[in-house]
Image (cartoon, rainbow, N blue to C red; front, side, top):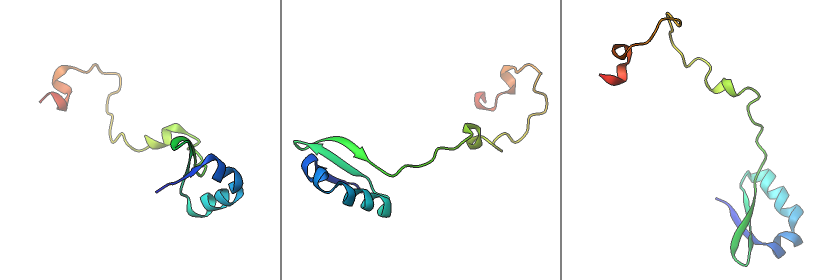
Length: 77
């Protein structure tokens, strides 16, 4: 759950909010006249290789150069 604070509250206690975000991992939503305008949340390092998510998902691929026909798809049955 995130905390909602006004711009003026955030300005006065910014370092306190930063420490809170670092320790709890929860985000802080900054509002302007009650309307959310900014979200501050902990930084998460992205995967270095986008193919890591796909690694080991292909179980078997016998003939990669053979043409694929309509009868070869399981989804059509």
